[in-house]
Image 1 (cartoon, rainbow, N blue to C red):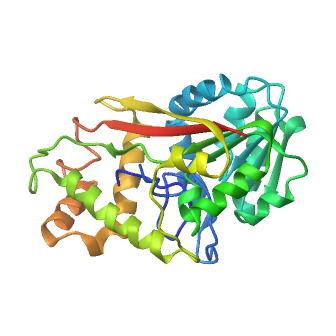
Image 2: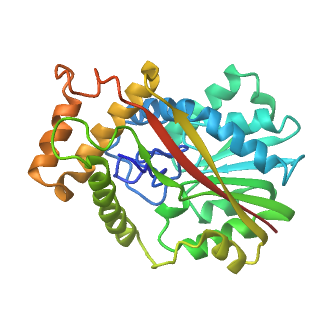
Length: 314
């Protein structure tokens, strides 16, 4: 509800795969090894596209910063691309590059191809349907830039997966890893209904949910979330981080309101077991389109998100 994990883990993600699916802990993306058979991919894709389009200003600034590290890559790979919104942004940022959107979902990659076609990028845009991390071996060439937004935390052994990412970089290639940041904020501390501090309790519930999600991944290995330290541990150099904000103050545009509603809806489904009855009742009021204190009508609704990008070089 606040943190969006990118990736589609029967969690909801993300935001993101998007770049993200559903909750993106700390936008969205990545598919680990999950059973996708129960998903309505059109619904997932609509959600991910709306999320990524809202976060486009943040991702553009992040990509511009990464470009100071790798100004003219020949091959850019978006690892866990989802429906390709950020992949296409990367193609804009790096007009001389070939861009490959890599994801475990064929339906989402179809969306990515269609978007690239609409934006006139098809001649230098490709897709690769593959599960992480093994599918990186299917890349024809090493990547000059690899962008991995919230896909890593859906893989059981994150260190081993990072090592696989690093292995597929060209000499002097750059890995940009989007993980962490801060829980997103949508409402003030006291919203006039329920107990004050709802968002902090939602964050605590999401932390518990996230720990259980991590532990349930196949081959899950506990790992200290020191991302620059992990990038260094797998043999990359010059690791550093920078955080980018999405700041949409009240009154928000309708797209931001719709995003907030979708985040609370997903959170309501994911976190019900972690919240007490009074907080669930408050969330239900917030989601009620007819309740004047709900998200559909509130004038104090805002979107404030902070995503951290960690970069390192081979």
